[in-house]
Each structure stands twice: as structure tokens, then as C-alpha cells.
Length: 92
Image (cartoon, rainbow, N blue to C red; front, side, top):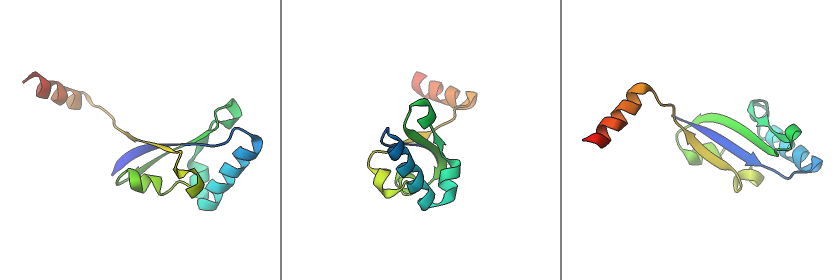
């Protein structure tokens, strides 16, 4: 499985925040609990990280009204070994 960062923007009003929070809550409380919200700092986005087989599977956890505007990014960790393999491959 791959790890994904999901960014879910929502309207920048108090009502927009409450609607987004309720949508996450109704999708399953574990989504609300695991989301980080930027609203209190003026950044009206919810962030989640999760493991999924692919982007489509990751997108499926987002409440339907917010799926179209969500950004999903596959995350990668690099070790020194991985970096060396990339370098070696490009030097040949």
C-alpha cells in the first residue's frame, strides 16, 4: 500500500467550516478525528494521511461533496540507499 496526503478545501466562512466538519463526521467519525484542520489559522483545508492501494481508493474516503476539489498526493520517503540507487541508475 502507498501513503497519501489528502487536502480537502472548503468554503472560508464559519458555515463552510461547520458543513465540512459535519460531512466528515457523517462519513465516519474516524475521518473527523484523523483530519487536521487549518480553519483556526485562516487556512480552510482539512488534511488527512492514509494508506491506500491507489489514488482512486484514497479519494473514496472523502465526503462526496468535497471529492472534486480535493488534492491527493502520493507520499514517498527516501532513504540514503534509495537515493544512491537513483544516482547510480542515472550515471550509467
